[in-house]
Structure formats: C-alpha cells, structure tokens
Length: 149
Image 1 (spheres, rainbow, N blue to C red):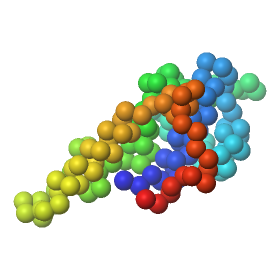
Image 2: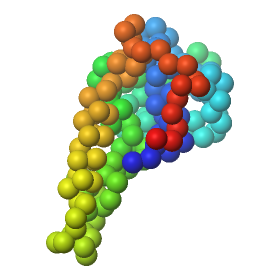
Image 3: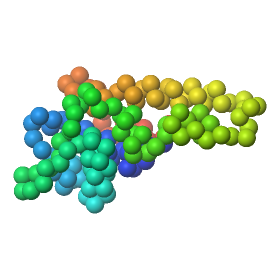
Image 4: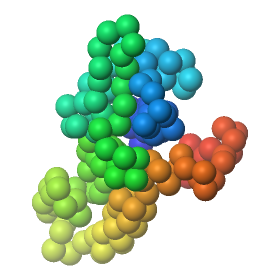
C-alpha cells in the first residue's frame, strides 16, 4: 500500500475538521493554506468525502465543512480505501478487489502478503481521527515524517 497525495491530503483536511468538530465550520481555502494543498484539488477531495458521507458542507458566506460523524467514528482505513482503493500489496490477497493470479496454486509468498495486508488493515482500521487529533495524540514535527519506509 502506498498513500497517494489524494489520500494524504484527505487525511490532513479531515484532521483539521476533527480539530474544529462541534466548534466551527472550516473553509476550503483555510485547509488548503494550512497544509499547502492546491485548493482545486482539495475541492475534489472534499466532494468525494461529502459523497461518502464523511463530511457535510454548508454553502454561503459563513459556510464550510464539518465532519458528519464524531472524530472517533471515522477511521483512517475508511478514508484511505475511499481515496486510494485496496490495501493489499497484490491482487490475489485483496478482500475487496480480489484478482486471481496464475501463480496462486504454487505461490510461495502469498501468505506473507496476506500478513502485510492484515497488519496494515489492523492499524488503520483501529486508528481514528480522534486518536491523532485529541489531547493525548502524539505530536510529531514535520521533519520526523517518514515518507519512504
């Protein structure tokens, strides 16, 4: 699994919304400016999130976005699958997008790839927006982010 820019930006925008949940609406240009996201691209992402009922929008002068559910009810897994599709590193171990492989009957590493899929799913399906935006969330500085592991 590789997190795309779309998935990354979606999570960053949602963390902004989680921070202001039950406080105020957040406007697109504010989220774009806070995270260096191209505003037109963010608008597309927010439209996808709205269609998936993860966010709600209010138009007008005092409009903006908010989460449609509490931050502890929105998982990273839900968002990443919406933005980037399957988590499985290869198609023959995907639960939602299974793709039969001709090597499957004799494959020596399929079980390893299933374990990779399961480990990723376990982490992101059990991590909510509240986990990373709450008072007890770990604080990381930008230079500590690991883009390539």
